[in-house]
Amino acid sequence: MKHSPEFTDIIMSLDELVTACGQERQWVIELIEENIIEYDVPEREQFTGYQLTTVRRASRLSRDFDASVPAIGLIIELLDEVEQLRQLKRQLDRQAPIIEVDFDSLK
Picture 1 (tube, rainbow, N blue to C red):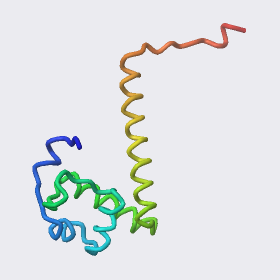
Picture 2: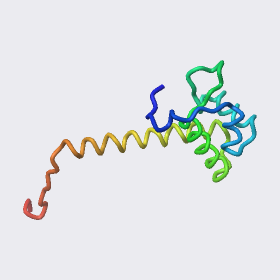
Picture 3: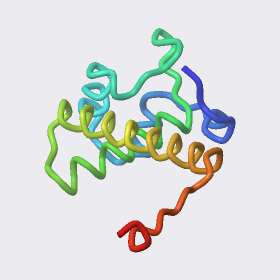
Picture 4: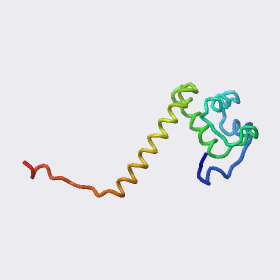
């Protein structure tokens, strides 16, 4: 799992993660079971700022849309894919020249 440094400077336990997100412990465990929250060393149950951000994002989806945990997983996956596509488009826009065509002159 690869995360940017600003997300890995915070290390917290499961209980601290639950407290920080304001949700029930069982709900956070369901996120883990659905692989919405991933972490490197499961037996140590240590979480970073990246996982906290994911849990808070999941919490907002649950609250705003009354989404189930499996639905939250799908929504987050799709939102991440959209962001990756946007980043790819930005990269391609910087690399490729934009060609403008004057369609009126073609008539």
